[in-house]
Structure formats: C-alpha cells, structure tokens
Image 1 (tube, rainbow, N blue to C red):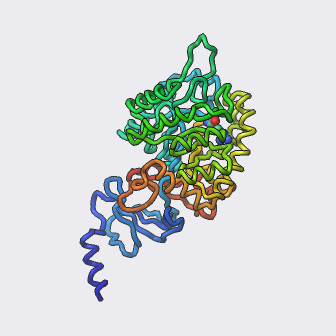
Image 2 (image 1 turned 90 degrees about the horizontal axis):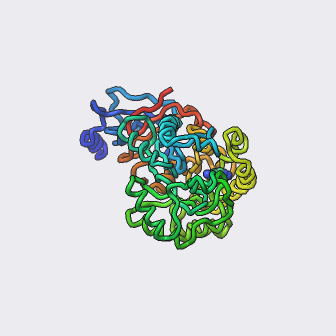
Image 3 (image 1 turned 120 degrees about the vertical axis):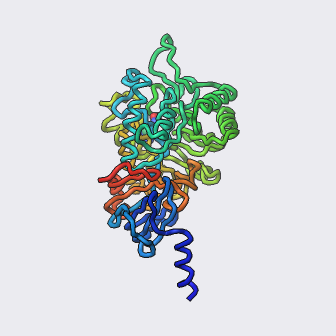
Amino acid sequence: MLPRLILPLLCALFSLSATAQETVLRAGHVFNSETGTYMQDQYVRIEEGVIQGIGPWSAFDHDGTYIDLSDKYILPGLIDAHVHLTSDAGVHGYKRLTRSLARQAITGARNARRTVEAGFTTIRNLGAPGYADIALRDAIEAGDIPGPRIIASGPSLGSTGGHCDNNLLPAEYGLKAEGVADGPWALRAKVREVRKYGANLIKICATGGVLSKGTQVGAQQLTLEEMQAIVAEARLSGMKIAAHAHGNAGIRTAIEAGVDSVEHASFISEDVIAQSIKNGTYLSMDIYVSDYILSEGEKAGILPESLEKERVVGKIQRENFRKAVKAGAKIAYGTDAGVYPHGDNARQMHYMVNWGMTPAQAIQAATLHNADLLGLSDKIGQIKPGFYADIIAVSTDPIEDIQALERIDWVMKAGTVFKQD
Ligand code: ARG
C-alpha cells in the first residue's frame, strides 16, 4: 500500500520524465563497472553533460524523444592511462627530428579525434615536447577540436642521457630534451616548471627504455633521492606521478619513492609485485605494443638496437603481466598509443584477456581502476548519477567477445555525441 503511494510522489519530486534540455538514452544492456555485470533495459537521463538518473526503462515516463540504444551493449567511456597523442606511429627514430613542434601539435589534433571515436573518452598523456599536450587539452576543452578529456604531463622528466632525454645527435648539436635535470633540487625545479606551464601530473623516466638510443632497459636512471624529491614536490600541489620503468631496480625504487603508477613494469619480480600491492601502486603494462614494434617498427624508423631490445622485453613483460594479475596487483589500462596508431587503443583488451584477465577485469582496468588512478573516480569510469555522460555503445557483448571493443558504434563524451554508426 505504502509503496504505491510513495512511488508516484517520488517520481514527481525527482521529475523522472524528460524535459527540453535533457538527453535520454534507452540502453539495452548497461555494464556496471563496479560489479562487472549488466543491467537490462535501462533509461539514462543526461543534463548538461552529466548523468542525472538511471533506472529501469519500464519505470520511466518516456513521452519525449530519446536515443534508442535498446539493442546495444552500453559501457562507460574507456580510459587509456598511457598515450602520446602528439606522436605519429609511422615516425620513429631519426625521422622524428624532421617534425617541428607545431607539426606535432597538428598530428595531436588528428590523433585526438581518432582516440575519442575509438571510445576512449579520457586519456592520460605521458610526455609531449613543447607542451603540445597542454595546448591540445585546452583546445578540446574549449570545443575547438574533437577529442578525449586529457590529463597531461607536459615534457617527461629524467636524467641526462636517459630515456626521457633525446640522444640522437652528437655533442656539438647540443640536443637535450626539455625535461632533463640531474639532482634532487634541479628535478624539483623541473616539477615546478611543468606545473607552471599547465601540467596535471608528472611523468618521470626511472630506467632506460626500448625506443631511446643508447639506453639499457634494465638500468636505473634516477636515484631514490631524486625520485623522492620529485614525488615530494609534486605532492605539494596534489599532482600524481607516473614512472616509466622496465628494470626491476628502477621499478622497486619508484614504488619506494611513492609514485602512483609504474609504466611498462616489464622486468618486475614477484617480490616487487607484492611491494606494489602493499603500496597501492598501479602497474600500467602495455602488452600489445610489442607486436606493432616488431612487425611495423623498422619501416617507421625504429632503430635496430631498439628492435633488439624489444625482442627481449615484449615476451618477459607479458609473462610478468600474467604473474601480476594472478597475484592480485592493481592493473591500469595503459597502451603507449603513439608508438602504434591512435584509435587502436582497444586492441590491448584482447591481449590482457589472453594473458590472464577475465573480459570484465580488462574492462574494469580501463574504466573503474583507471578512473581511480587518474584521481577522477567520482566523475568517470561508471554510468551513474553525478558522473560525466561518457558513454559508448557496441553491438556485440564484449564479455563474450572482448574484441567487440575494437568496433565501437556510438560514442558520447560529456553529453555530446562524437560518433554514431
Ligand atoms: N616507450 C616504451 C619504451 O621505449 C615502449 C616500450 C614498448 N615495449 C613493450 N614491450 N611494452 O621503452
């Protein structure tokens, strides 16, 4: 008796019916990223880019127009925690020296569109010269160009001759990447500098890398004191820190210094996996990119020494990814798109499933968990009232076929539709 009286009253109070400035979706199967399960035949009501309500379609007064996604699988917009929008996958090694900063920014505009159309409505850009990532972020926010929401680091910070430096030319050219500094205070100054010019977070290079000339992937390139100084300085203004690290000593030291995520984490040992769990550090392991580097890299200009390194790193990284998943590590979804083509960001899903995750876990990494890593867990990664209306639709159930996420039909970011098939 009581519920029968209360329900209409509540409906009136919260005005469940559609009004003019609203967008309403009829959503067939809505993925709940907290539980990893679907809710069937729901309405989603959106106002000013934010989700206002969700519930059974049958309980919704649907007089007005609505977007009919009743036969689709609906998920929160995907998040990639490691991309380089201003990088072109066909331009590596010495070819990069021919690209001006202005040209890179324009490449970034193209890649931003491809990324959002692929269903990635938020990305973390980890390293871009000339603050081109900040310019892109602001242009997208202003509505000048289409693209994902961007959390940007500006130039990556690292030591002289390290992975974040540019080591392509001999001394007489004086080539040095803008994020290079040595010693705790010089690195603190770099944190202040990138913050001054608009960075949202700090990216550091804790070890050598695959694609940098003359670096060893296993070698640690910042000391504990240097990493602690960076972390302490970043924390003063509430910034997070992402550390590129392949070698185990560099990974261990970065976690000890208190970074939020370790990127690549290729040679991570079982005890350092345990340390990451204890400290709550995310592992962002880009386990797809190896296939692209080894098949297309040479044409794109990747140096022979880098291909040599990749042959070792790629395989071990996948095995260690499996161990990390099994141990219950916090896994982010980070792909290093830019090394391979933007828009293919979802290809890694399938690899994560092949190497030990369930499809639901892989999707949770790219939604719920990445939202937490980005410090946006009350705004993105879920389809829930109060969250941005970042919503994607696919025709096939990705829990049955994870590669369905490589074929996105429909994309909405903050209430605006960016793709419809
Ligand atoms: N940017 C990274 C580096 O140069 C790419 C590593 C790619 N390889 C891999 N197996 N994840 O080190």
